Length: 336
Image (cartoon, helix red, strand yellow):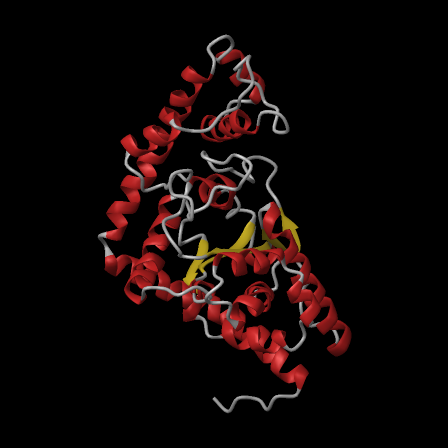
């Protein structure tokens, strides 16, 4: 299939820490399988990270390390455009323009804004409030057909669609209105410590990082919260058995086994046998990814080549969209 015949897919993750199992199973693993069907753009969302105070050296390190992890997870730089958000200046420029077409009420209803305010009460800055406009710019610059998002990001995708439609209604057809792309399997991996909450970097004991050592992964699964039912049977029931259901989702995602097969495999064995088995399966699934990421992190020249070429390819597409937007809103064409 020619690249011009493919639909376009785009997504990004903040480099606020190492990728974790939820990122991998819920997003990156699925992205790798899309490259033959879509023109794919994936980026390190370092500009979004600035809404929370960052250690500058750590942010730079994590941005490049995350790129290595992307590649180790299966994102081939030859098939996917991989870049660092801040290297493509069109993101920030379109972000400002879309701020002017995003309503205050829309931004104030964003649930993640309320959550982040609660967690960062001493740093409730303007960027924290308006970052959905930058997220809309991230997406609309590349005119994607689909945006792979988790359930918790649907609100941002809906806002992006609203802003695109509003802009198009004012100025004529400018942006393609994207659809959310939500994988049916592994889309929402929960915390091992609080299985009613999504796995998060902010909860290191309930979060399995792809760079974790095998002994750390095993320990986290041994301590994973299951459920207080008396039967202690391995049965998929997210409503009544969120802990074991989360472990079954993880086990299914890394082994390819169905929930029915898992229930038969551990019939009569209970949680004591199931939890370490899930840990062992995750260790083996993460081992080649961790080893390949470590190898690439040591090859700084290669990673620089990848993000340089990625920024060049991304800028080529983003600049076309931004020129069109500048013309539509009445800005004087750039002289160079």
